[in-house]
Length: 480
Image 1 (cartoon, rainbow, N blue to C red):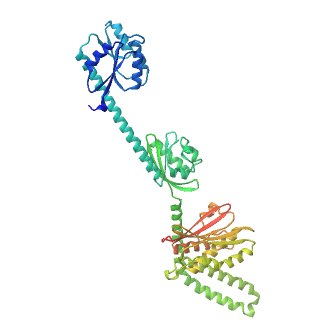
Image 2 (image 1 turned 180 degrees about the vertical axis):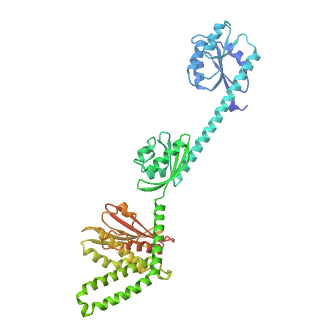
Image 3 (image 1 turned 30 degrees about the vertical axis):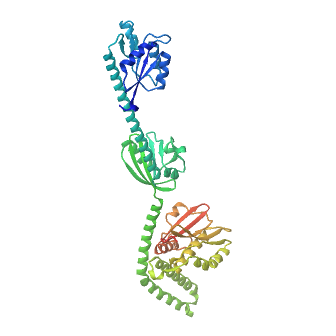
């Protein structure tokens, strides 16, 4: 047995000669024999040392053996220590029963058999060693669990998905950093609070999914629009409640909508390219005859009608032209150039539109890399977005056209100070022929989305009652 495993045995007797006799019998390199000459001294030792067994004399001055045993049993640290009474007094059953009632494990009557005492002590020492080993193993397991818990926590804190756990009463029990960010509150503000406090008035789909996962103990996955964002929930039940992973998929949803919109635009563009020739030929013929008839003397009284018909044919022709701009352009029309000079060249034209309606335009052009651009199409985008912005504002409003570089993107921003775009209109933006203007064709934004696709770019927007910001995002893989 190693020295670190030496066992403490406490011997309590007011007579030194009795302690010496016990020491002679129990002397062993495996034992540390502690001698106490009174009950008071024994109490100090059991509070200070880890004792395997106590040999306690019954008859002592001051606190006797029975009283000492009672006090030892009253202390949390020492109540588990086995006590063997050593006595030379009565072996009457009532006397022995008193000792057992006070916590004695065994009795040894003087004079005692040395071998019997040694065997009893060895038995209790073995129990103590087993208990100590069990405690050691439990500490190892507890340390491992704590380490595993820290590792799991570290993993959960570092993942890009939000994660939280709720108990069976729907209260938060754990929240990682990403969940804090998405919910806009710290752990301290959320732990112990009900999930339904944070998700007030949740969509029915969300309530139904969480309830099903909790009650039926099944995994549930769903996508839902809540708190102004699209989120993908994965719910996993376990014995203490629910574990929930959620991801903000707003950008993905926006991309899916953009792809669907572009698919529609491409289809329309292809159809327009296919039928434009067949439609324009008869339109040109009709316009020519109307022009000729309007100049004849016999038709002079119908001049106003001819004028209206010709204007409507011209309007139809311009719509076909816009339709054609939705179809794809050839790569040779894209030239490496800077976006800023295009904006500078258009500034006087946009400024003239603004001044005529008592509005203002300012440009903020950042340092940006050159891009593969179709000059004519980019001019069309800027004019469309700028004129839409001016139309949305009242007198005195500012339109800001800005360019800047953000990581791997070059961004053209057109921000107005209008009243913003309502949600029902927001969903339809870019749909051909949808317009909120009395004289609009509904093809302006549709054309912009088509041009964005051809430039490997996307259009996003930010809107509020204080205005709308259209962001034309060009991909810049070089990041320069």
